[in-house]
Image 1 (cartoon, rainbow, N blue to C red):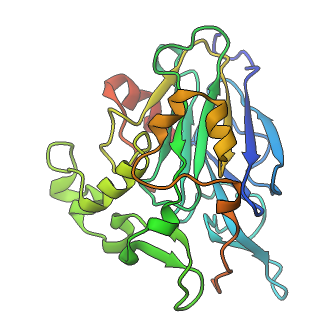
Image 2 (image 1 turned 180 degrees about the horizontal axis):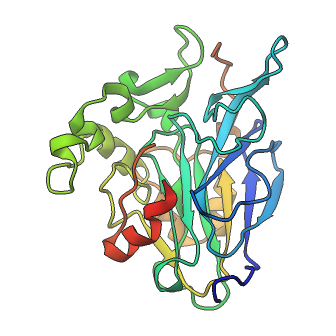
Length: 291
């Protein structure tokens, strides 16, 4: 496929949670735009979006969203994009949020994609390529299927209400503590000085293919060739959906607990960008403009 030719690929977003999810979408600067930047998905609903050639951006799920009676502003407890409306309109997700990140038709004509927990976690998410022909050995499903909210360390937990026990999200150590060591900033701003911490290892053990910290390159970036691969993004993948994609799904599970369809029910309401460094120079160049 050549530049300027429209792609026939689609992003199909499916909600297997036991509650409404409001997907948010942020396209990269200079990237073509998708037809929407935010919408609602009820349980078991799906929506397919055409993805133009060369699209680059990120997608996430917002939860516990409401419209304020007095101001009319739309807001969400997790993944809020701060636009005040259903569409995110150029605004990104407020951490913590599980992110799916894509660059289509990048270096060598490849698609680059990942699921990132660098900005924390709020929902389990699976990204599955639907390729035609041979997408290449690195064209595999990725994501985080574990219920990290239930297992989240107390110091990272975003609880459901003041003093509430139930967690609705799990912060990154960078957001929680702001230190250079946890954020890979300053003297820790390169792969030789920024290493996994106890907290990033918690995310990695639970979700081995997801990005757990900024330089978690080798096991977290995936590529598909061919220029026409479509992708399915599933929130709260069920046990049945894990089985449906074969034994490869076993690589997505770590030390955490995979959820059945009943595991992902809504927690009680609350009252109220991480970096991605990619596998190799080619990958870094392909996705440098995502952020």
